[in-house]
Amino acid sequence: MEKYPQDWSKIEFVRRGGKSAEADRVLDLQDGSPILLRFFIKAQVDKPLTYEANLILAGQRIRGVGHCETERRYFYGKIRIPKGWHENIVNPNLVQGDDNYNIHRSLPDFLFTDLVDFTRKTAAMWHIVLPPAELL
Image (cartoon, rainbow, N blue to C red; front, side):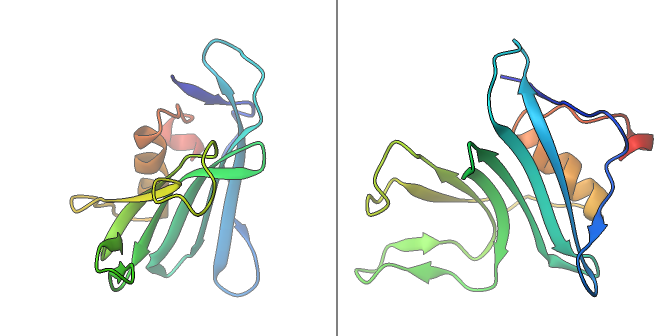
């Protein structure tokens, strides 16, 4: 279902000490259902591999996009976090110990040019309608 920001003003990346920045938008569902949903982006502006986007439902992350330099495996050999860009898909209906609680899906073709492009592409992935280009 499409999601829309409650505030259509220009999305400003707020500096958080040094070169770190973040942006945050509260979202509404297309049908107007009340929901506590946020789109949150954080990054070290000059280091694209630090860019991270999250979709947060009632204070709990349910989706995320991030980068991992090396793959991480479970003790029994199965890949837990793939190397490179990946999407986290969190199911809050499961307990944290469940293998399906937080799935990491590889995004091998995830390419972007800058932080604004990263923001637009992650928003599109999660069906978030953002303001026109001049407002981002």
